[in-house]
Image 1 (tube, one colour):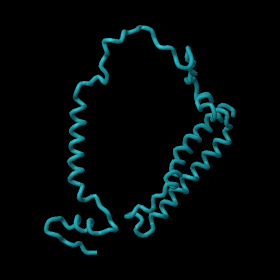
Image 2 (tube, helix red, strand yellow):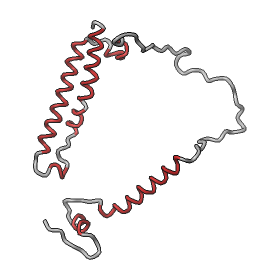
Image 3 (cartoon, helix red, strand yellow):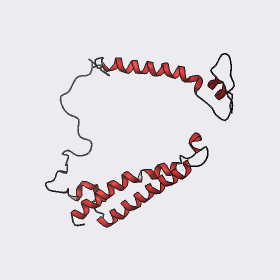
Image 4 (cartoon, one colour):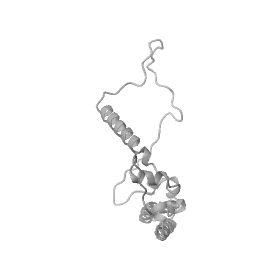
Length: 168
């Protein structure tokens, strides 16, 4: 490949604009640069301004001191999620996972980890194909989704440990 030159444009802009296989944002880079500078300046100035009230109080509506009625229940009942000791109670895992046995959570953790490892390995195989890094063809949605199996496996293995300590 040779870069063609043009008197008015740098050679890389001429090449990318005239190559239908490589669409480029090169002509828009100066505009995007100034847009970035303007947004940066706006956020910097906005950080040091006092807050502006979003609504103005109206004078024709009488203010009441009574509180509106609650939507769901009059007295909220919250579970205390604190614990004393080495491990938390099973209720910290929520309504579904607190009822699952430790062995099942361990198997689901191993399955999630296996899916993550498989997805990462297959993405590595696709990266080795010629031109895959330049075109981005190695990024597959199902491998990206499988990559979330790692954090999920970590959370499930912690849940399995909690259930095992609580005798489930």
